[in-house]
Length: 622
Image (cartoon, rainbow, N blue to C red; front, side):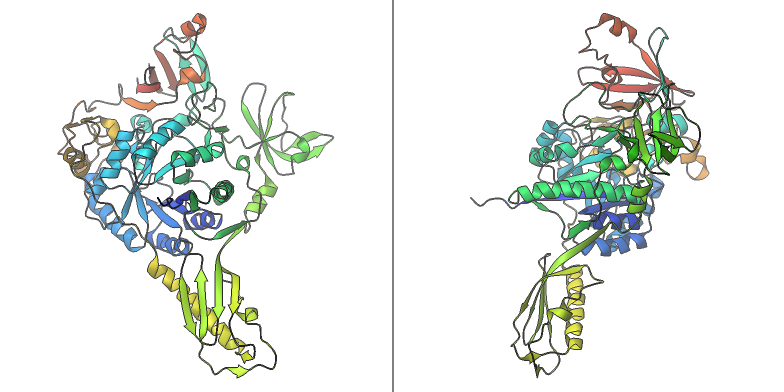
């Protein structure tokens, strides 16, 4: 039996705009994901189709892919707009769309590949199989999964599986959070999340006693799976995704370069098992360090199991930066932060170091035992603002009496004929001196095989001409032969794993409702965004909601947002605080956390409930 071909391994980086996307590719990304002009889950990160077309040309030169996020909910009156957008993206050469609304599978759109967004909440084998059956080409898994759970899903499907490996975490199951919508009328599923999870909360028990005051009880640390890459590869993951479509270029450069180096090392050690998904070599001109970029402290979340005190950043939602162990590491102009004597996270700029003491831009009192965090590094910022990476493709050349042949690492071959009468050289010529001048291109000469007769002379102008023509022809050939993946066929007989959908399934239009009914769903409660409590900002013409008329509304909220389950999460506050109902044996601690527990921020109060059998926590708006 023949050994299977090495599995392509994709490093997928985020991009706010085309320039950040290009930086990601130069620093080693095999693919980038970016928002279009509308309906991306980051409303502040929209991009024109023309900019995306330019990005596609840049990326495809390295056989890197461009995925566009069309992963918000779609209202009925927006269907035609989305159809037109998808057609434009298809013509721009986009490789795939990342979507959550099943309406896309019923729209009149070209056969562009579809990826199931993390908002699809794929955390079971049954859900993954269904999404594969209905035509998705790649599945983005929920971020809450352990390595064994990921392995089970990878073993159950044939399409590539994508996992997040770095960046900010939603405390709720992604796509299933209604906190922002219910509290302030801004839908996370429409790209307008108000980040209720990053607010300070006060925790009270059943007796009204304050257990935690003004703590960031729902604010998770940033995900960091760098220590689990080999496990994830072994489990079957093919695409490794970095979060951060609102992050700046310096963040994307640093984090992408770091994971590029880690994955390259693993691939080099396992060449028969894995191969890189794109082409080219990135020359990184700095030493990537994850703690140099924005982070709230790191967690590997559920990859290695549940551990008290390992997931949340309870004291601040701000960046923790890097820990400084010696003040001599600091430079004038750096920003530092620390927890002051009142437990508050405080920041100051460095004006100088004198006798081992920090002079600040204002007076401050650094507690003796405080840990110093550098959250702004002027030298690092200056470095990252420059040209920090170059990406090139290796090129082999052959020249003979008839012409020039090029072979590149993408597997392409082109040939250009000589067009002058050759002469007899007075001394042996070196064609590499001209043919090797590839500056201004993405190519670098690896080998040149000279098959010319030793006395053949070709003018330098002719060598330069055939070099230019061959490079142009190579670029054209790459465009003409680029391997697009088209949308997979839908198996209309595949039953959806559930027969009844509640509002957390995010059905917001009649096309999505029809899709689920085609797949044996019996009852559907519509998404919060199209229920009676939908805030004015999300209403349409005439002050009427574009509620899906075909939906069978069960339990729709018509009178306000109180009583709505706004969030279900695998993160458990009891466990984080050491009071897990299953593990805690201290009766005094159990009594202290007497239920029902509530958390309050400003005018908003949520009741906490705990499903210990499933190890989940639910927030209900009071």
